[in-house]
Image 1: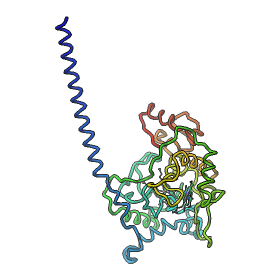
Image 2: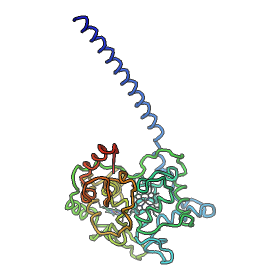
Image 3: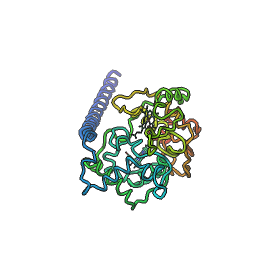
Image 4: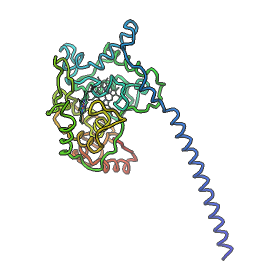
Length: 337
Ligand code: HEC
Ligand code: HEC
């Protein structure tokens, strides 16, 4: 009996030893990989390089300069403030109203390096998409218009400008501070009355009591763009997702702050994003055909159909954690937005 016990204990010890050994090996593999990733991803210098187009010569860089003008004065060239023969979209926004600082601001969906990561898989179309198609996604939704002809001088100039902003980046290099910085999503529904209070306190002095922005004195453009209404982004835009808007607002608004010194709490950013996105804005046609694979739809997409049974109200205003949990348990998909 004793002998048997001792043998069992021996087996047990050996099994334990093997487990420990496996753990140790796994630990080293993971540690090695993450330190490897860190060394290739420290490209923060990208955000302090010189992206001033005025230093370029007109002669060789006319296309880049034209692209920069299209990116920063889009509404005067192709939008609500343009000559009607040129107009391809209805909003009064310009690209740089959201992609701040002419597309060079970290965590304000910068264009730096973006040329090098397209073509890229996109869930909304469930296929590999080009940079031209991605830009046209913003023309149709964020700008509330139609697509810009891919062979047009305007599309080529926008691409030339984004290529120029991407000139220090290697193909498929992982970019830090790309896109938006995530907030900690409150585990509750958006509080619309707090959202309204935050709006009154922090936003109206620029965007106006009615959210319609303020025109420049000569009326040639907005000094502060509209947040809803006929001249704002439509209801198919990425900015209408509460999680996306909250991340943008937290780390970029009130205008003048950046991700290093945010002013709003995650709660306030979440509530004010919900409040803005409950207001009336232009309608995007055919939204129901977005995301042919519904499982890939971000949880805060404010319109159906969905691959789940949560209500539209919950997709618009949360709480989002139960929806995220459903996708993880049901389909093994981890969702962050
Ligand atoms: C109302 C705000 C808004 C405006 C105006 C806007 N965009 Fe965007 N853009 C977004 C959002 C939000 C995303 C990210 C969407 C997402 O997460 O799916 C995005 C993403 C992009 C991307 C992909 C970036 C990446 O890192 O993958 C490109 C390229 C782009 N926009 C170009 C443009 C251009 C060019 C214009 C002007 C014609 C424009 N956008 C106008 C909000 C805007
Ligand atoms: C000091 C003025 C100022 C304040 C305060 C301010 N914004 Fe803005 N906001 C701007 C400007 C200017 C832009 C466009 C940026 C650009 O073109 O460079 C902008 C752009 C935006 C955009 C994207 C473009 C659009 O029209 O939809 C959103 C969304 C936004 N602000 C939300 C907010 C929210 C929410 C608050 C309050 C928490 C806020 N802003 C406070 C000045 C301000």
